[in-house]
Amino acid sequence: MMNKVCLILLIALSGCQAKRNVLSVEIYSVEVDIETPYRIKCSDFSKSFQNEISKRKISEENAIEYLVSILDSSNKEDCSVDTRAILLLKFKDFTDTICANEYCLTYRNRSFRMPDKLKNIIWDSTKYNE
Image (cartoon, rainbow, N blue to C red; front, top):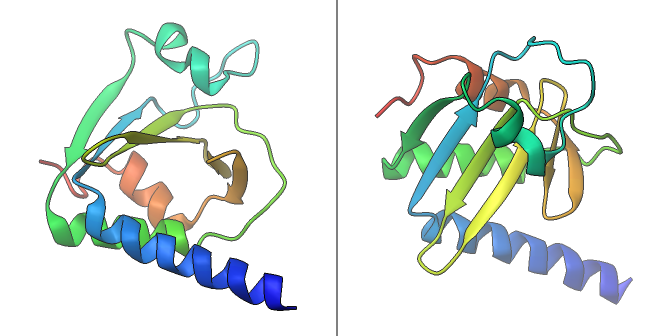
C-alpha cells in the first residue's frame, strides 16, 4: 500500500514539475483520417508523411499549462498508436515525445485514451496557433 501511495505522489509531483518546466510544445500532424496501407510507427511518422505534415508551436504559458493538465488527466488504456500526430514537449535540457492518433496516445512507453480536448487542440488548427 505504501508503495502505491509513493508512486501516486511521485506521478503527481512529476506532473506539477512538467507544468513549470515545459518551455514550448510543437505539434506535427496530418489529417486524422488519412488512410495508409499499414500502421505508422512513431519513428516512421516524418518519413511516411513528409509532404503532408502541418506544424504548430505553442509557447504561451497558459496554453502549455492547459495542455499539460489534459495530459495529466488522461486515462491509461492498453492501445497501440497508428501515428497521425507527434507532440514534442520542449524542456530546457531535453524533449519528450508523444505519439498520437484519434483514439490513443503513447507517452514514456505508456498508452492512454485520447482526451477529446487534446484531440481538438491537435486537429483544430484554430486553437492555440502561434
